[in-house]
Figure 1 (cartoon, rainbow, N blue to C red):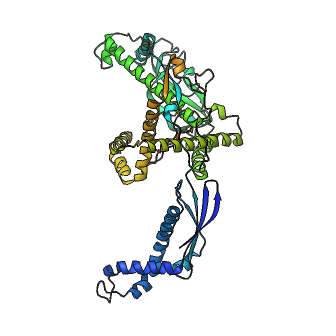
Figure 2 (figure 1 turned 60 degrees about the vertical axis):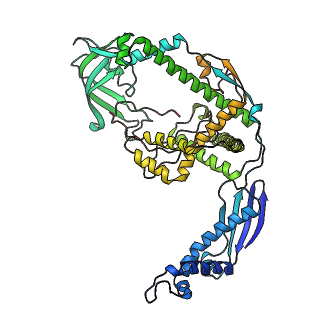
Figure 3 (figure 1 turned 30 degrees about the horizontal axis):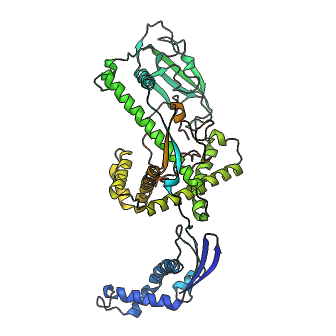
Length: 509
């Protein structure tokens, strides 16, 4: 085998590797000798088929397998001999004619292109310094949450037959929708309860029921939004023949022990304690998220080294694919709407570079400090993933059990969080009391207490179990905290059937 380095630019290397036809033929002979005792052909005793006959009958197909094995072995040896730590899988470019190589008429010659890992010394987490925003739960927070809960438990009582519906009332109706005089699927409902002013139905639907009373039969004329989820209805004008069956007024929900009992708790005090605990957990989680963002910003500021171009390109392609989909759907972030494609590409390239850089640094810190993900941690993650798909739990678990790569993708975010926790324990972390509004303020927002990095990494997705429909990806956020995020594509959950008139929920990007 001959190995020759033909290109060395930055972190990219190209090697020309040649394995002679004689070497391949020797490998083939060794392979045939290995399998000969197991070969059984008509006219020969088992295990007594001559090597020359086996080679004549099966040599070409066996050589095809040997060529791939030889390329893999040769590339590994070339990397080891040159002391190269690859950043990703090498790429091969066959220089010989495949048919001539398999037929034994030509040497196997190919190019191996590989990116190498950069050499750098990670920053000492103990020398990092950040501020951690913290917020105490106030009685006002609890009272506001209690009022929201009470409003969500709101009930309605039917009004007199002559009562006219007003905003806040619930109108019970039957309706049949049509477009150009033809009824359409999903355009009808019976005993639908429409809360006026709730904004649950398409624009104009609820408004035209204002002033209606029991027994009325208004015809509601509406236009479906241009971006309506059902494309065959988007932008279309429709009529809904409606029968008002009842008008109900809201009944105030009293905040007392009865409300707590209704929610499964023993008393109002117990309900307040539960609310306080939930808010405390929410504040702690947000504080942790802000701390993570800031420790990653501080870490990123400490490193500036060349990145493997293939890793950056793969990261960018993953993000840009979703950006293009969002641009096509018109669902990009407000801050990106007026930017040119060139500007967006430049911004998302910087995000990709940050993600790769932080991923490499976190991996090195974790390795140097013997941070590892235990098997039981991965098992818990698999079980949690399976629970997201009721009725498919067994298939999801089996998928991850049979796919080490998928398990690795679940392991990545667990590893990241453990490294971040390790850094937060060592770093100088100063708690700073802030208001609730400040706690939930994005670090990039005007007036935020720590604006250290304009662009954050975007969220990637985990690999999905095969034979399951992929859910729509979340748009890559430039205000994300993850540095080496997991990849995930989840199977869609079955959605409840809805009337076409009812507004479809939108996914925030």
